Image (cartoon, rainbow, N blue to C red; front, side):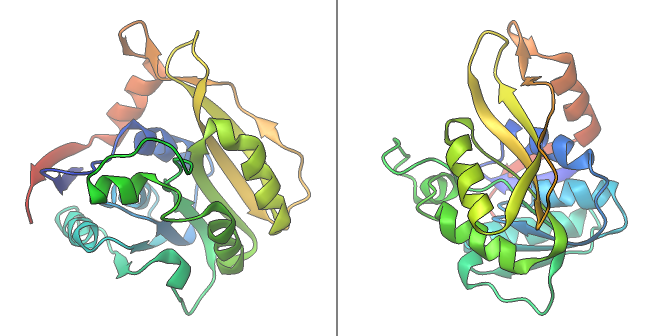
Length: 231
């Protein structure tokens, strides 16, 4: 998959590739919304691999809307993207799946002076409580919410989700290496679920100085090729 990305500023990273692999475990189908789509990589990869997905997206940064639209066009994927803050977004339907690699750096974390990067990373751009409440309102009964977040905030994430009738049913922690603490957590959440939580084996991104075999398999499956440019 060819993907145009900004020459300068925020570009997708391994989090999106790992999350794409996690989402693929659940064989998605039906109406799907990608929240904070960026250049579109996450949703477009899922829609490419799962033809029964009907993909829409919402993105607040105008430049990214242009990149995502262009990426959908060159990869021949049916795509509707709306330029809007998710908290102001209105749709005429509820969704079977909502996916997101959201901004999750907590208030007080060191951020880039580049506005595009800071907006894409800081959860002040999409506060957790408001984000999850909006997701819950837009999901169908028993709908799926699959996303990643800062592993250090996992307990807080679970509490806020529960308060808006969303429950974590599958979780996987991501570690850079086997001897390092988790930096990312990937969550499969369902609306009004009563299921207990299933914890997958940890995902290790690196073995030594190279990507782990599991990470290599995901990059091979994704087959992405980035083109850095101005649109």
